[in-house]
Image (tube, rainbow, N blue to C red):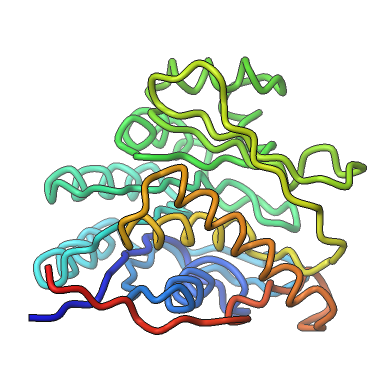
Length: 272
């Protein structure tokens, strides 16, 4: 029998299509992976900013996850915006119950516009229940600073290790904006020095959903069987090319999306 390679996104919905669940579906599909979703919240937003967020009930989130696992087991999971502490606990519980693997946690706390997307109580719950369970966490500079209380890369990695993080990708897209290079730091479990991943910074306002896109791309490559360093490297290359391809396209009046579908590949089919 033949099977699609699959991935599940657990995240919020973005009606403008550039971030959240919508970005994850586009990314996974563009990388040949069959995308499934469990929606945690409905955001009211566009490229200019966030006007409101309404959480989906924890019971409904739990039901969505169970329904997917009971029928189509995901090869990888991407976790984005969780909105509330109760939803965070439910997600951690259901993934543990289903023995989920290849979990990429993007600890979404603020939008590109700077608008807050998560309750204060949810942050502590993410730290307690999800960071230790994740295969990889992908905080940006602001999220890493919020989680660790420091801006120093080495100290951030050490503090995140203390919180139970296994593998850590400190994203550099919003660090040192005056630099021509975007530098990410990948710290792997049981290693001393992080892997430095550099790419030339793309000059564009179209950066809406870049974090969502990167994390779902990493999950997609993990689902396809690449190891973690390969998955992160491939995903960084994908997001850089998506930024380049969409740099001069106007969608909306604010931070537009990247071009997720600049070069889609056919669905990855296996005979597991």
